[in-house]
Length: 204
Length: 269
Image (cartoon, rainbow over all chains, first blue to last red; front, top):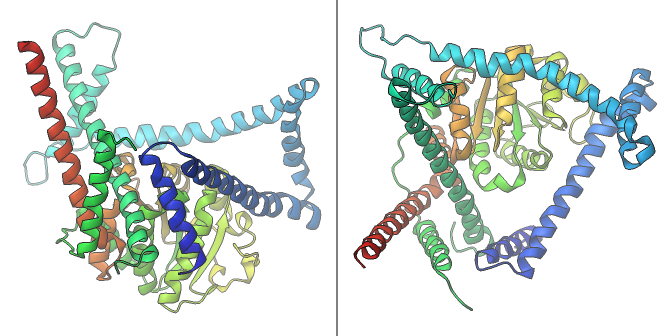
């Protein structure tokens, strides 16, 4: 057994000890995970981001325009002192402004217009039959929207529609939770498979 | 050592999963239309087509991501597709590189010619948008520090227009950014291999044709392994998955029965 499998197996078991209760062995494994993750992130960010995209092009290739992001980045450190903290507002404003400018049209297109377009699809198939999926989606959207309409009291038709909306929401939450349980089970099964085959060598 | 009911619940689940895994039995798997669509998509690509495989996940989801990624890479390499690996989450960087190297070795694929790994870029939205303008400018060097213009596979690869598509191997909502920015603004075809927890997030995009195809969770991996006729962790884990789900359902039923019985007793007393 190689050393990496041994370490991975012991750490997996250490994490599983939390199922009994919080304990120092679990804490050690958890702290190790956090420390390694942060260290890995710092190294990757330094090499793939700061070196590749800023320092090498600026100081090696002489791309002077990169002085602007370098200065903006340094201004962020102004937050560490009261007298210079106002400086950090400029790069934050640039970030928010450019971020919103990029995100708003993209979100509007992908999450609103394209989704609305997908909702408005033919309710009858080419063969003349009912398109059940489209009808369910249309009803689901209308009923759920009516549940979130708070300008009138939920009575009469609006009340019935809002109630149906809550059912659609419950079905969605149930499905999402079911998939989440499935996902967590898969993670557990993956670790058990590793323990049985690679670590303990009880299964192929 | 004081054992409570939750300990017995965990212990029961562990017993169920271990017995299912040790039995070695693999149940019959029915392939879903979504998985079939992804398989047909890869099958339809001509030899030599270039695909971006983006490892958009953290290390903690590796047990679920690994069978999905391995099945995808095996199929793509067996079809002689040219793969460009990247990572938009830092923890996926090493994992993605390791998986590509492992599967490439199975098919005797050569680095730089049949596949490359460009590594990680932070700020995923900026990275996706930047690649739409120039992939070599976004990734001037590959993961191991080799200049991208010296890699034969990258010859002629400038933007998304030079690629057959992007496949995001993801455990979170990063695929939606590929759809919104890569697909929405640059028209690149986006597909995903995702964890089961993300299926309901991706479904609306699949329904609206903003995402081309999706394979989800361990079950999706098992279905894909069946289609490419190569066994893997997905198929091996299906019995354990089924048994663990039955165990959870059983616990829910028992819990509800006990609840109603205790409520009835409370009323009568």
